[in-house]
Image (cartoon, rainbow, N blue to C red; front, side, top):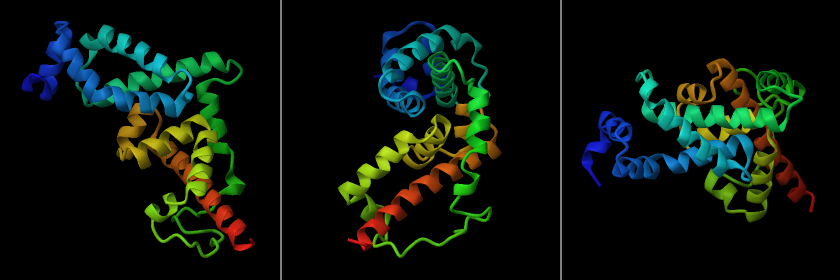
Length: 208
């Protein structure tokens, strides 16, 4: 595969000319994280359909790409917008903007941390010293996975992009089209829920 596609300008040129090799390179480079973003917003059922629709939009809109962000971020934002549009259609009673307001307003009484990041009410003494130790418990891993699935869409998206894809917050906010302050609140809410799941799991084990 041509090395010229490792340069963003070369890839854009190849895609614009309709070169099959450029398409293959783009799919290899971005398909995985595109599917990840789509899944984090709409779930597994229609994520692949979202990605296919996003690719069509990418190709149609490529001439409008102005380079204000990386090509990757631009593509992922198209995925995000495609997914959020589909989510609005699936849940007509709640617009995406209203959903964001609702997510930011919910859970204020459930927060486990204060603004400085310290525990409001310290957890019990966990038996897990590292993230690897936490995930070594299949039962707890399943509980965490289920909790992530049940998070509101934007909380789930911010958490998965930050913790599992290791993206920077400014890039996540560009992808999801939210402010950085809102992004941090959503991440805070999501992390609080996951820590609560771990704490509940530990409490249940300590009483066995």
